[in-house]
Length: 476
Ligand code: PLP
Image 1 (cartoon, rainbow, N blue to C red):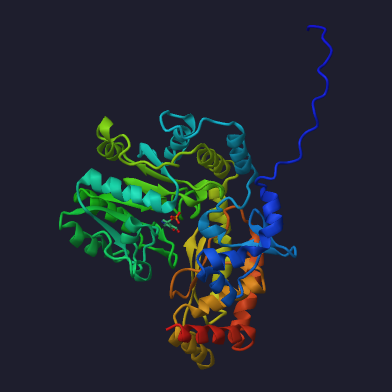
Image 2 (cartoon, rainbow, N blue to C red; image 1 turned 60 degrees about the vertical axis):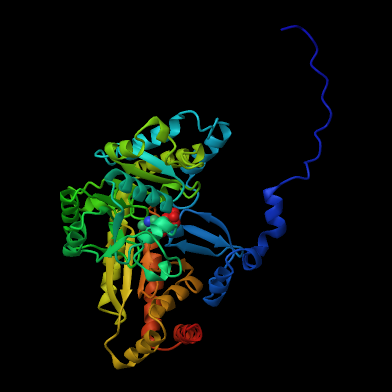
């Protein structure tokens, strides 16, 4: 205390600088999204959205819902392809990201060992006690690229096997283990990797006998079509791989973190212990892209085998503080809110109620999945009247009936879903793990209304079907 009088007030604050202001930018140009995409980004996206009537402008989102400018609310049964596992803007994750920003951390210096990556690795590995180490990247495909490289280096072998219809990402390595030609066409030559039919142990063993296989990469439940391998396949495949000194890579990018009602989907078969696990999507909390590859000690030691090789596999943004904070918050919320159990119970409820419709509607063939990953498959109806309509769609292009269902679910019932793969008559539901009975009720009411209309054999839904047929024929 000096007894000095307080300083006189300073000069008035200057007006805001004319520099960057996100709110102002959005207020001025927020309505130009479709036009800007048409001009500067993938021009087929706005084109496709307009064609199917999906060209909405959403302005706000929370949990399993988002809203358009008119205040209409939409139910999200897609979760940004699984990224929004906790729903949008979960307060705990949002606060964690804010806290990481506000802490002004000395992030990404690259020549230090900050605590957050270590803490997130520790927490992830607690869910897979047989694994020891983690490599952090920025996306699912990078998590897969890491696993492919690590498996090749650790085994000294070149070939990675994958299952037909598999999806592991779209960078060149991940594309080489993609089981769908529609993604691969035009990008050859890819890596010398080989497809085996999902569930076919004989085919797997034949490939392993050649002695050049580093690993088999497998989605415990395939995203395309929501297909599960036969019971016991993962365990038997693991046994075969071990006998031939090859590795098992579980791609849990979509199925991990509680999505299927287990923390990891491969857990559905006790005793399955993959050598490498890939995770991404929901670990981001929907905020900060992140990928992680979990693996065994010896594999990491082969990759980082000397001090010279310390940067032999790294990523400039990998393990950044915001991503790590989001990941830690996500794992904490999954536990605190019991989301794995909720996914199991709510998924069961959804599938039980959907299964009741299978006998009632001819187009509805099967409802399958686990936890909050559900596939609804459509097929050829029995009655002649509907069979003719089905044949008209099939002749133009497979997958049009599923598209015919997805569109009114959004445009008339404001529920976002997706067709589960090219030319598949399957729609996939992967809502946030936080949904409960009210969302199940809303989906069932809407889906039943769409099925009623489809089975009436006329009306708007079939008018739209004819439009789809016209477009499919025109694009041949
Ligand atoms: N692996 C699986 C099983 C996926 O479902 C996906 C994306 O859908 C990826 C990998 C690729 O993830 P990303 O889009 O983050 O690269």
